[in-house]
Length: 308
Image 1 (cartoon, rainbow, N blue to C red):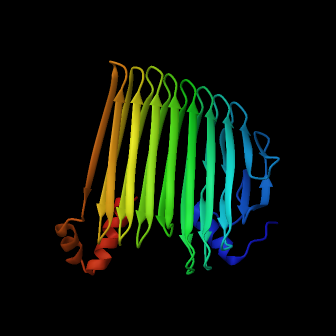
Image 2: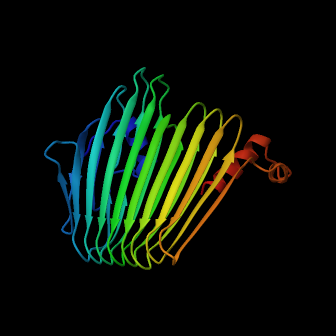
Image 3: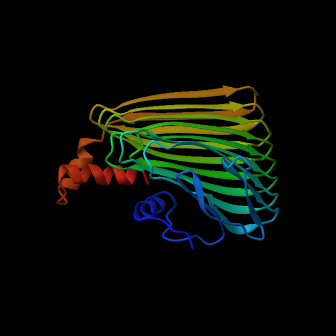
C-alpha cells in the first residue's frame, strides 16, 4: 500500500484526478523517489538505472489501457530533472496521464523539469494529459519546465491536453513534434497566470509526410502583473494541413505576447493561424450580474467557461 501524507494526496488529486492508487500501469513519484510502481501484461514500466526517469513500453495492439505517472514535490528547495520515454506499439490505443504538483511552504525554490519523449507506432492512438499545479504559502518559487517531444509514424494520431491553471510561478513549456504521412496531432493548451508569474509556451511542429495534419489551440488568461508568451511554428514540409490558434484574456496589469509562425515548404501545404487577445467584454459581465452574480463572480464564471 502506498503511503502519502495529506498534502501529497491533495496534489495528486489536482494533477491526476486520483483519490487512490489507479488501476492499470502506474508510477507515483514524490520528492525524488518512487512511492509505488505497477506494470501490466501489456504495459511495462522500467526505471532508468540512473534513477532519474522511466522507460514505458506499450505492446502493439494494446487497447483501452492507461498509464499514470504523476509527480509530487512537497519539500522546499528540491530540484530535479526527470526523463521519461514512451514506446507506443503499432495499432495500440492508450491514455497516458502525467502532471506535476508542487507545494512549497519554504523560502527556497522548488523545481521539476520533466522531459517526455513519445515514439508513436504506425496506426497507434494516444491521448496524453499533463496537468501542472502549485500551492503553498512559502516565499520560494514553484517552477515547472516541461519538455514534450513526439515522433509519429504513418497513420498514427495523438491528442495532447496541456493544463496549468493555478499556482505555478515560472514555467518554460517546450513541445516538439514530427509527423509522417497520414499522422494527426491535436493539442489543447489551457493556461492561467496571476500575480508576478511568468509562462512561456513554445511549439515547433514538423509536418513531414503527405496527409499529415496538426491542430493546435491555446486558451489563456493573464491576471495580476503576470506575463505570457505563446510562440508556435508549424512547418509544412509536404502536402499537409496545419492550424494554430491563440485566444487570450488579459486582465489587471497582465501582458501577453503571441508569436505565430507558419512555414510552407511545399506548394500543397495548407496552413492557418488565428490569434485574439483582449479583455472581458463589459456586456458579458453585466448580463451575468443581472442574474444575481457580483462583478467578481461574473468574471470567474466567464474565465472558467473560457478555459474549459
